[in-house]
Length: 267
Picture (cartoon, rainbow, N blue to C red):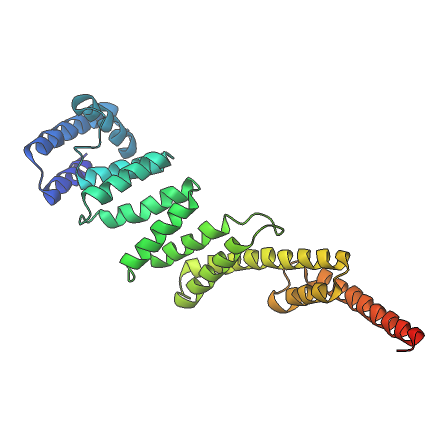
């Protein structure tokens, strides 16, 4: 109980509460004390949830009067409960109303995380990139770069579709590995690089097969060789080698036919 109360009181001192906030704080602390006494083994999270409900009953269901710390708490609770859109709204509000608060940096990063969880990848990428730009020396920057890569990576569909997401993901993961080689996120990025290579290799291989079947053998040969040269063995290496042999045989046969035809025509 003392730890929970100390945490609340510290928060109130740190933000310079108004009279209304002091009244709100007293209500929160009173409710918390009663819940802890009556519930016995109630967890902190359960206590916080009960307190929030009690305060909502007194002051109404609105974030308008919340302090920066309270918005941070509320946003984290929404995020932890999987209410990501609600978390987006609360973290965005914290950023807008308290841009110079010590909680603003938390809001910037968790706002990006919430967008990512909602599969709003463009918004997530923008938020992560903004975080990196504003806080280039922050210890969370490797994570932000990794999440930019993940946001691109998770948009990859199948090898026969546009590969711009795979290329952007690959570029981002390689940048992370180069700039922060000792980060644990660099190791995870290296694993995703293989996935990017596989998608890009599959794309080139598929185009090569299309050219081969269409009789455009030089173009097909260029694609198959690209798979061998540009991408490690990620599942298409042997298939590309087989098609290179078949394609070269077709080109040779076409050349021989051309020579024979020329001989017959006397040219």
